[in-house]
Length: 439
Image 1 (cartoon, rainbow, N blue to C red):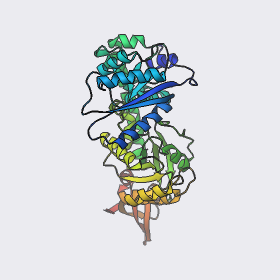
Image 2 (image 1 turned 90 degrees about the vertical axis):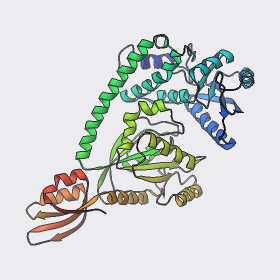
Image 3 (image 1 turned 60 degrees about the horizontal axis):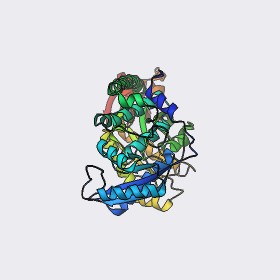
Image 4 (image 1 turned 180 degrees about the vertical axis):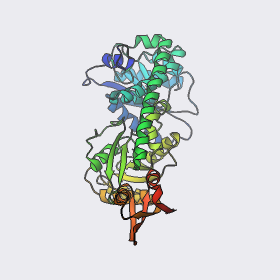
């Protein structure tokens, strides 16, 4: 994907702007029936964090409560005129809706306001565009972006998206005249990206088969964005993964080997952070990456105890897990940043029996977490009884290496073992297995 006409490369080259000059953003939310004032305010606060991560500043916000969105401007006509005056008063560059705009609504708003109007999805795409570094990550982001923009071209809503400058939501707009005017080129590019990602998925499947043959359990770290997943991985494995106090700092999964207190090794994988109302296009484009969670033996669900609404974030993560068919994978709820909010951490643990609290930064609670994780994983394994002749010390060593040996009894000519083994390990030691039992 290094060809000269790569739209992703063209976009990045066209938006290398001075980030010390930050855009002025007006945030807009339309509260619909069922939306409480507290929920709307919390969502706008999160939207402000997203905008800040994208490299811009909130200068004002506007909220309207409606029974249903207006099909022309999403806002009512009078409120849209009020928004126009507000933008003039604060000299705003861009209007960001915390709702999802239809292509025609976006076009009509930009025509009325005389400035760029984008929605929550566009901002998240912009942030993903900034943080995509690997070939696969860039391809996934570009695919999501093109799928997002294609219906806007079909509807004739030619996005302005700051054609002469960069900015929030315009990371892939500046310099992309050919994409905006040539639908066939977009479709060709989408098809090419889908083929490339399918090829990468095949490679990942081969790697996964190799890991399964190793007999090691797989554990995926999931959670809301900026919950501390990468910090936890670094604490456990000294992996040196990028860890920043910003949203969506990690897009590409990283897998490391971890030895649990009992000595048994597992594979631990960091994943992209989730967020409430994660755009479906991103979920679809990142399905190859997100399947790490769906195929894991266990999930470590990291929660930020210092967040404004930890329970809401837990619910949002569970919603995404359902969308990627990972809701049936057993999970261990880990309340992180207990050093910052010890009282809240204790309350969440009390409300969720079996959860553990820790601080990935200070190391507080890490030992207890590892013991619980080891116990949970061992409870999933089948206990096998093996009879191993004394002259097969290599098999005895393999049983210790690949599983957890529960007991060993010496006989006249052989050892009799009870050991917890994964299915691949049991297959390799099958000729010595005489019985199996659940736990």
